[in-house]
Image 1 (cartoon, rainbow, N blue to C red):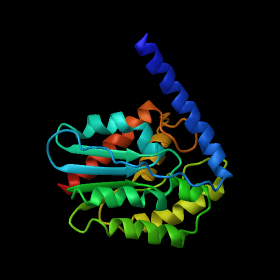
Image 2: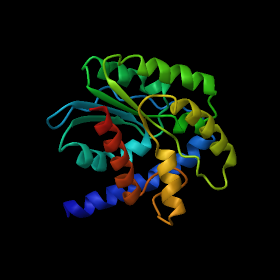
Image 3: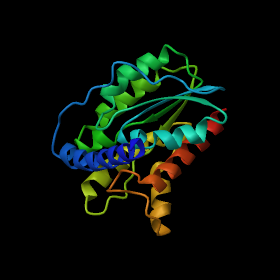
Length: 210
């Protein structure tokens, strides 16, 4: 019975994410960060992971990919933008993580936020971790039927690729789609196969830091 409930909840979460994607495309509602951050679990260097729904859906896959060597702490919220996760970043900064992974920007693009605002917000967030290796994640531009989103995301990605450590999710999505792999549930959210692919990319970038 418990397993059935878990499966049903997982399906509801996936359906809800899809609905939220379409709702946020036309809404400027501000999703807030949680009042606490995810604890580090495991042994090894501490890895703080700050993200939105893409990370939220991939939590299990990220933990499985990182925990053999690292102690990840993950705080991810569906629909959240970069500015709202700044408080999460400040809380993680106080824990002095060895590595920080930031996967934010998809909702900023979706809600047509100005690139200059995103650049300032992400730059402020990265600046909180002067002693940490910071990994940023690009935003997929492979969104058939939504060329405007792809164009805005491409501008964000130009900036993201200037950082020393980049998990290029946009490139990985493009390669997977070209190879005929089904890794997304909609235009941006990974299915289970995509979650494992995303987690592997994050683990690779984290390992390059250490």
